[in-house]
Image (cartoon, rainbow, N blue to C red; front, side, top):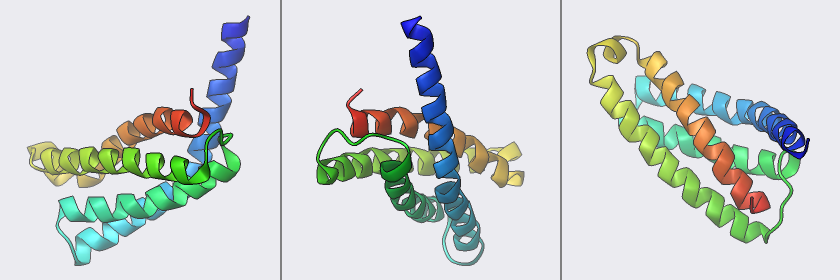
Length: 133
């Protein structure tokens, strides 16, 4: 019964995380498209757009998703650290995928795939950052 409760709590937390992440993800996606089309190559556009999403997500998750069980400054530094690692993983993944025939023609598909992977990595790392579990 306790496992079922934990699964429900995790599921609800992931839904809240996903909901608040929509704003950051939307800004990430929009800024990526603008940066890639007009200013930067794929790798740098991915890093810049992910940074915008990361900052917005931190404040939204702190307010609406997780219970802060450590100092806010520590949580921010840990959150930023994890996010930077995942940003670079995403950027290298985008670069690699964009060099394949399929994703070279369907770059938006690569972006969606990379964002999904980063969502899972971010949820579980942020849960640890904020709640120590």
